[in-house]
View 1: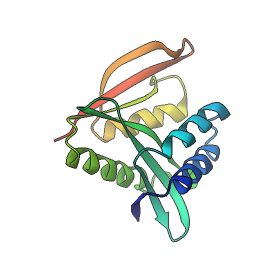
View 2: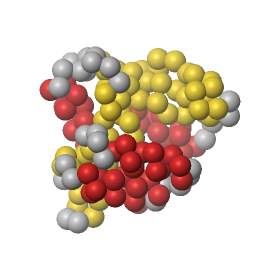
View 3: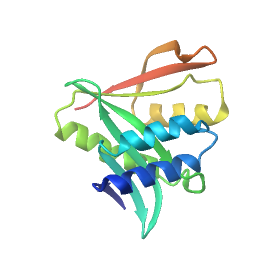
View 4: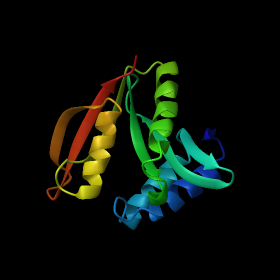
Length: 152
């Protein structure tokens, strides 16, 4: 079941524990700390199976018109069960109800790493379209692909 989490400490704990369990995507401790700390102040939804948190997603406003999928993670043992899709739909509905016109997400460019090829395929399946690739946003070895979609 996907629920919005309000408690700041719980949001940080959920974010940190799942990202630490996904080293193929989130292997830099400083990045995990940054996501976990910022998640305290941002809307966060978690997929819960009883007390087990299977995944989460965080929304961040980037302008009055646009919100971003700031960070998203689903524990690897729960991949391909529709959890990411359910989490995304909760975030999308919130964005729509909040009056945002666009959603964006930043990830690594397609074709570099198998794990990120799956990430790119997921976002495309949700309806995101390629906007641009910023080759030095993170660093030259990790070009940043930006995807966007209209919120209707």
